[in-house]
Each structure stands twice: as C-alpha cells, then as structure tokens.
Image (cartoon, rainbow, N blue to C red; front, side, top):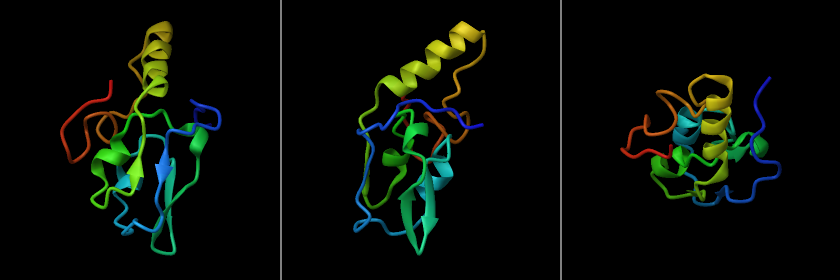
Length: 104
C-alpha cells in the first residue's frame, strides 16, 4: 500500500502544456505521484506527494512546481517514531536525482 502524506495537497502544480514528456518526474519521484500518458506527465497520486521537490528540481522544462514542506518533514518524523530512516526516496528522492540539493 502506498503511503498518503498530504490529503489533497495543493503545493504540487504541473503545467501539462509546458511538459515535454521526458519522464524525469516519474523517474525521481519516490512515491509514484506521476505517470506518463500520451507523451505528457500526469499527476496520478497527489495524496502520495510528500513535497520533497525532486520532481521540480529535475524537470528540464520547469513544468512542475512544488513548495517543499510538511510532507518531507512528516517522513522524517515518522521515521524517527518508527526507528527507521525517512521514507523520502533514497537514490531517486531527496537529493538523489540528477541535480544536487536535498529536501530533507
């Protein structure tokens, strides 16, 4: 079962007109928020977005914006409470994409 982080999160915005269909967002999203359909990215699981910003940092067309925030913090807190690492993506997620930077 996929984790839900932010119910009806509104900070994730995809400009489908600007999308070039490269699939970078699908590749780097640690929680399968996006899918490619008919050559364009689509938001498939908005509630699974943890606002890490990996998609926006890796979009070559600047078609995605997301305000990093409570979702990533939530992953860190849940990890601490469970005694596990944050579930913010490993290699594909926070800071592990093609561009440098880290949300967590």
